[in-house]
Image (cartoon, rainbow, N blue to C red; front, side, top):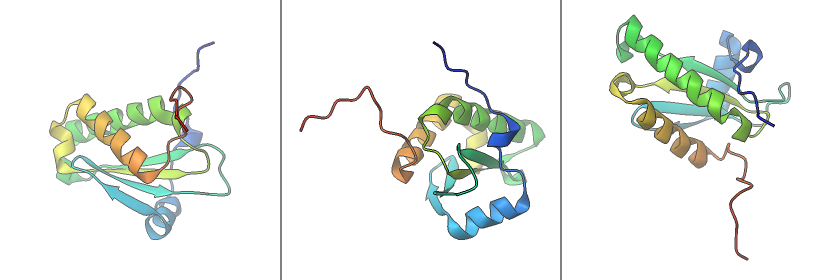
Amino acid sequence: MTVRLRFPKSARLTRAPEFSKLKSEGTSFHGKYMVLSVLKNVPETGAARMGIITSRRVGGAVARSRVRRCFREIFRQSRPSLSGGIWLVLVARQHAARAAFGQLEAEWRQLARRSGILLPDPTSTCSS
């Protein structure tokens, strides 16, 4: 059975109070291409929700749109492996506009591991 990977509106942070709550109560993890802010144990949500911030520092409209599309795709693919009840905000940095998709994805994985939002991999084996 295949899992449908979608990014519905219910999985997006869209309101200013949501962003400010995450900024005041969440934790940030910094990388070269992005800043990942995480708020864990949000009671009113079941699945992970994400918002994206791309300022004009990133580049023109075309560059900012490309970065947003890349971030949405990375989140869409990673959604099944994320723990529930979390809010995420990805803030694009200037270097993100010139980065390849693979570089953005690798940094996302690194920041997600560091923040502890990934579910344990069922295929990995631990020796006791």
